[in-house]
Length: 375
Length: 58
Image 1 (tube, chains in turn orange, cyan):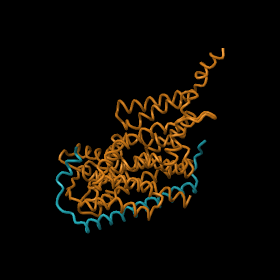
Image 2 (cartoon, chains in turn blue, purple):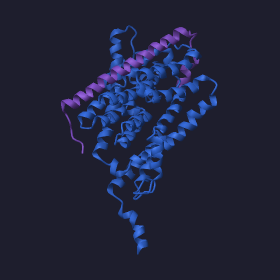
Image 3 (cartoon, rainbow over the protein chains, first blue to last red):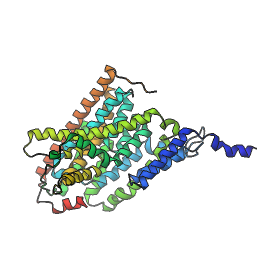
C-alpha cells in the first residue's frame, strides 16, 4: 500500500501551473530547434523549465534537500560569475574596427538605450517597485548577460521572466525591429544611401581601445566596470595578437559552456508558483515595449542629426544601436536592400551595433549606480 | 499582487531615472568617442580597408 502511495505521490502533486510550465518549456524547445531562435540558450531553458516543474523535482531544493540547480544558481548566477564569464567570450567575438573607423556611430549606441528608461518609467507606473522596474527595463539592453547581472544585483524577484523575455525578444529582433522602424520612417528615408570609407585602424589603437573604455567607464560609472571590464578583457584577448588560442577558446568553448550552464540554471527561477503569474505576462509585454522604444529612440536620434547635418544618415542605422549583435545590423542591411538593392548599409549598421553593445552594458551599470545613489 | 501606481512619486522616479540614465550614457559614450578620435590622431589611420566589408557580409 505504501509502495502505491509512493508511486502516486508524483501524480497528486501535479498542478495546472506545472502543466502550463511544461507547455512553455516545450515552446522554448520548439523555438530553439525548429526556428533556430537562440538555441544555445532557449533549449536548456526549455528543458530546465520542464525539469524544475516535475512534481517534487529533485533538481531543485525541496525542504531540507538542496537541489543541484539551486547550488549552481548560487555559485554561478548569484555571484554573477556566469554572466561575466559570458562577457569575456562576447568581447572576444566582437570586432570593434568598424566602430573605430567610424566613431560617430557610438552615439547611436547611446540613443538606442532609450527603451530601457522608457520601460522603467512604464513599469514603475504599473506598480512595480523601483528595483523591479529597473530590472524589467534592462530587458531593453537587448543583452542577456546584462539583464541577468542587473536583475540579480537588484535582487529582483522577477529574474526568471526577465531572462525569458530578454532572450526571447533578442531572438525576435528580425520581427520586432522592422515593424518598429517602419512605424517612424518613410520609404524615402529608408532609401537614403550612405557612403562607407572603410579605413584601417592601427593595431595599437585596437589594443588600447578596450583598456581605455574600461578606464573611462570605471571612472564615470564604477558599478558598470565589472560588466564593461570583462567585455573589454575578452576583446583585449582577441586584439592583442599573442593569445589566439585563448581567444578562440573564449569565443567558442567558453561561451558554449557558460551559455549551457546559464540556460539550465536559470530554470531554477522558472518554477510554476513563481512564473505563472499576471506579473510574468506584464513583464513579457514590457520587454516588447523596451525593444520597440529602443529602436524608435535610435531612429529618431538619427532623424534629429539629419536636421543639422549635410550628409544624411539613413535613420534605420539608429535602430542598430541596440545591443542584439550582429542580428540587428543584418536586419538593417536586409531592410535597406529590400527598399533599394544597391544600398549597402551593413558596415554603418555594424558600427552602430557594436556601439550598442558598449552602450547597453554602460546603461546597465548606470542603472545600478543610480539605484544605489538615488532610490 | 501588483497595484497600478499612477502617482506623482512613481512618475518622478521614472522620469528621474530616464533623465539621469540617458544623460549618463551620452556623457560616457561621448568621452569614449573623443578618446577614439584621439587614438586615431595619435596612431595614424593608413589606407582603405578592402577586406572589411566583405568579411562582415559573410
